[in-house]
Image (tube, rainbow over all chains, first blue to last red; front, side, top):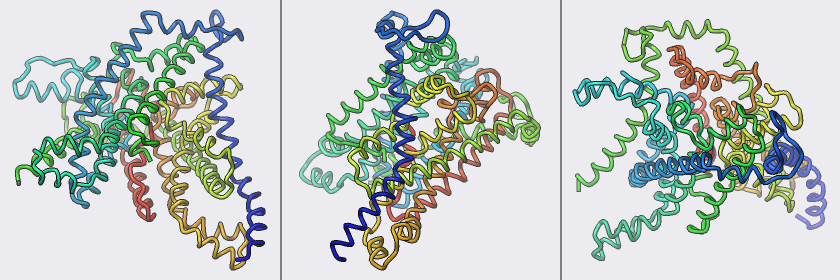
Length: 293
Length: 268
């Protein structure tokens, strides 16, 4: 391994390597960065009367967001996101935590059991909830069968139905995040705390919870962000009764044809998203989201 | 002590059962003779028969399979070449390109759909299969790239060096040493991408043309307008397909020395 052959080799290899990164560079710049830049530009352009865009700079699109009707939608979206995220955290945290305590064989099995529903089309899973929630559906059948209720609940197309759909779709993100940080937890620390006289709750609060906090927070981010945009859950389980930012964006784009406004809404949603990730990094001082890769 | 260990397990089992109930109901009702899904009319395969007579649905299914195949294979080529090239040529711009290229799975799906819709109409690309393929390739690339990159990082670099010292050309060393070693990662990336593409509805809704339907789009519109039990049969079929692909992907990732866990979380 003489130094000179190394250098010449590296030079020759560099050409090939450059060639091989080219497709990724070109695709990324053209089809990811390009569209993103255009989105931002468009959000500052004026809208033509009926259809299309005028090349004139304006910040009107951003100001429109502050109109009460849109502000209310943002508020509703954030509220639903908060409700679903909290529910997901309450249900998912113990799940991920308990799962990490299982033995290796069962951990693997649980992993598989969790992954399978996740692979299935989200639409199929939503459809299952329609079967459950609709008038005279499975839930009504059970409740009326036991005699708890005597008329159909008509839960489909209500706020709770949408919340359940959201929780159901997003729960695995939380479980995986919590699990991946709980798995790394050194349980002997908990034992030590117990030996030193801490109660189970004290040991959990001061050690387990603190060390799994990055997982919990990462799960919160992974749940909160998509829940703002999952318009099809609100669409299918909420009818037209639950309107989220995602629904407005879609409506402005496909029906009202107000593209600049849809662009502005998207930019705001994106900024909110990256702010959350930034906040997460600040709090936990972790670069990557726990359990993401 | 026994009571203590039991309660968490009951909880785990309870939540798992809740997770599976909606899926099992869909499968169960796909074999239901009765048209009304709240009534059980006996076992029947008639919805499967009707499904295979529905030309529009079958066409959508073919579209979906073509789309998933082309997108996942394009992503495999672009992603693999990119990961391999970046590991060798340490360009200063690599970091930023890597960041931008993984954005499609980091941002809310709806935004990815919107930026493509706007961009394609800007450059005047007619909406249809082409636009679908570009959009789907964009969110498939990160899966392949991340998996291959992780595999390359875990690889013993002295193997390639040895091949080169023994006189193999750059190309030979790649084909004979590196490629076989990263092949499981590529394959698992392809399968994952295929499954994600087959499942995508949010992005597809925005970038598809009037005449091009994919299966998820078709299901989505039916769920919104009116559902026939054919959808149950269709969902069950798709469930079986994704299940097989998913299991294959897990098998393949087990071949790698570094287990690739929880890949699907990236599907943000």
